[in-house]
Image (cartoon, rainbow, N blue to C red):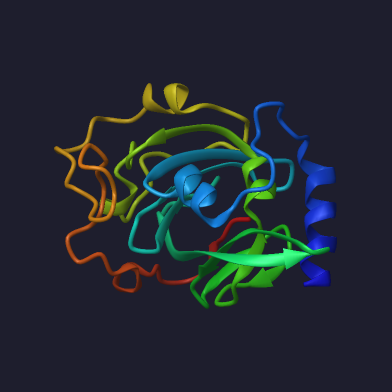
Length: 194
């Protein structure tokens, strides 16, 4: 856990906290903030990233420069650092992925306190706004420059009607019919987030 605290402190220093960012999150707070939502995040190393986390534990990432939507897994767990319990948000991408910022290959879980990840959030909306769960190719090549959902929507064709995402409110959509991210794993080397 000491490594988690050190990494979190370094991460915060590089992101520039936003005034509306939530404080320390509990596990239920983190679920409410991230799950069944499309999130646009920005950090100096990665640039803009767009992701959707479904209720079944799958995350779908639209990463700058990638041609494919990168499927992965997420989990939220309670951890204690300095006697303070909080939620940690963890991501795992395939073994054939590579994080250009950390210089690490995929397949291992990458965890940070959920409120630290939240500090990179630029914009979010309920549901799978860009249909990432149903795409293998990205809507278009994403620039690393900071942007919003509304700006991105100007360049994306509307998707077929949304399908319900089990475990999300009825008006939230996006789960692929089989719900299994591993069957959509990309071939070759792809960049992963966070």
